[in-house]
Image 1 (spheres, helix red, strand yellow):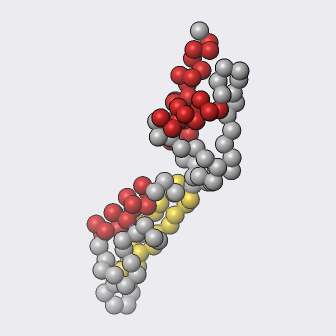
Image 2 (cartoon, rainbow, N blue to C red):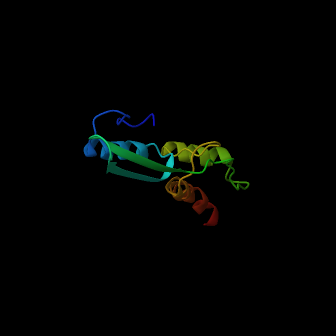
Length: 112
């Protein structure tokens, strides 16, 4: 739990747990994050449970190209818009949607 500020044996803080949630979500590594806390049965502490579901890893990236549009053109367009699609990166539906939107202008001139 490298990204979390909360630590075992540390002071319990709901606001810190909310911040931990935001930090974990911001990494883009996880499809789902759930945090639960309950008062410990012995002592005055809390038991915090964090359940994470990782995003799938992208095995490979390929683009269907033609005579006029080359893969380097698509990669340049994605790079101009700070969109990274790479093998062994994390898959997120939002990242794929952004890539689809960014490459559309490349194909439009070919159909006119």
